[in-house]
Image 1 (spheres, rainbow, N blue to C red):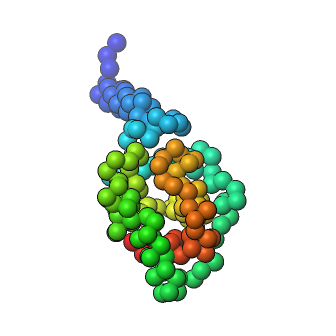
Image 2 (image 1 turned 60 degrees about the vertical axis):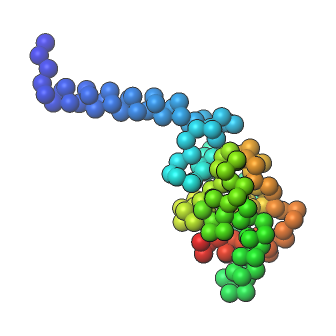
Image 3 (image 1 turned 90 degrees about the vertical axis):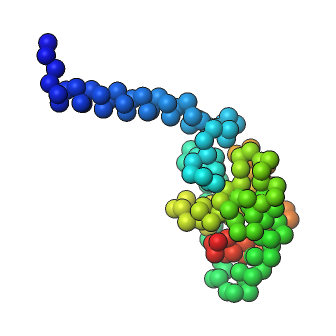
Length: 163
């Protein structure tokens, strides 16, 4: 049987795509603790939380959360002060995930400057992330719902949206 060039090219494309799919399956695509030790997506962006949301959704009571604050300069300034106090040691002063504590963490702290521009970074997502911390994804990020009021969390959200 003689193969045409078209059939050979089509077969090579199928083989290449199949190989790529198999390789990706071994790179932490499943849910669980091991996934955070594999690739984290673009540099500085941990996708463990993103994968959690894609698989399970944003948990209640955060699912419909909307920031009630409108972005007044005073609220953003308060959010910045809270961020510097509670977040900068891991996420860095500019939110790039390069704070002095970041080096020893797994997964690495997210680059908030990149994260807040992703479609997944809704008010609900950010409220849940700050409130619950890393518990849902087994990361070392602390929960802030006991130490910050809801209004303080929303002020932090306003500030990180400026990064």
